[in-house]
Image 1: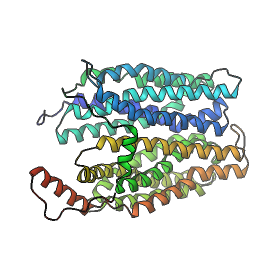
Image 2 (image 1 turned 30 degrees about the horizontal axis):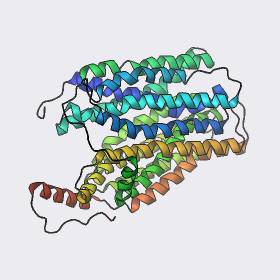
Image 3 (image 1 turned 60 degrees about the vertical axis):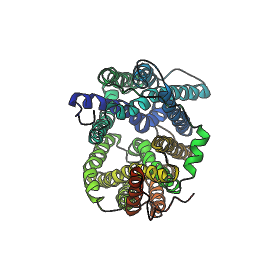
Image 4 (image 1 turned 135 degrees about the horizontal axis):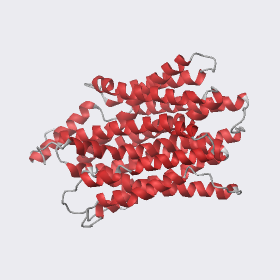
Length: 459
């Protein structure tokens, strides 16, 4: 397989997995919080706790599902059977979370949505983690793996566009009431279900031994804590994730209550995504010959400028100002979100110098865990603050409440971006040091002693 090119249809169909998962994730992040407050009528503080609990469970199951699939010994394979096992529960739980049951008790209503969110999170993990682990099974060719990842990324962005531009239009088309939201949820449940059978059909697994030695979760975290570069990376990444998830969760509230034009949400998000995609090749070109932390810092500048404009934006200002600010935020975000995922591979190289082992799965697993937890904690905190100042859905709120909503959507994320950039300034693993690490690893493979080994990570 090393020298063979994968067929185009396999790449296209495999990429649909990220499309399906991202449709669900974007709906839960950008639309579901508004649904809970303005359709269900849940207090905003409780609405912030629903995804916090659900994502907390999801973050833990990511690690467990990876270990389960590694150790599966079914004749049908280690990964592919889970695509069919989890697909229908994934779809059904997604449809269920958009239903509005007649529950008088606030506690029971909260428990209902938390329970469905947990079921949705677990079923999504059952398909998503084995799906992601399939990529190295499909080919060992370096460039073909990159090609597969590119098809996944494009399909994922398309999923974001579909969700943000179409979901609420379906709600409006069916009348805009609670039943219309349930209908939209059912339509999108079918949309996220259909790709998994074709994916199962065209993919395959190469024969290999299952992992016999699996470290405990406690050992996982102990090993990670020993790597200084990773400690710095998770700080800048976690702060950045809060800055990403806060605006995403509050934009619909922001345009509904602060700007007074909820119809602005879809075009603004479209401009945001277009600017993200457009800026990516520019950032890749800019990154040549530069440390990754430098690229990250420049991305933070554009991100802060865009969010700052949204904070001071007024309803009577021209809509073009909002679009320009969104474009700056999207361009900056594209670098600030992309670069940490690139840094993680360098950290794994540095870890190999000290441990003599390749542990990318360990690092990526915890990175994903932190991505989900940090964003959910930030959103829950913002929703709690809005609850405390008296936010009420469906009515005209006081000016003080609106300024808190402004701050949570734009100003607080700015502060987290600045804090993340400050943490990035002292990130120790630069371009030159990484090249030294690669040189030593190459020498080790050749069995040649290195005269001047690179400094070991500070443990």
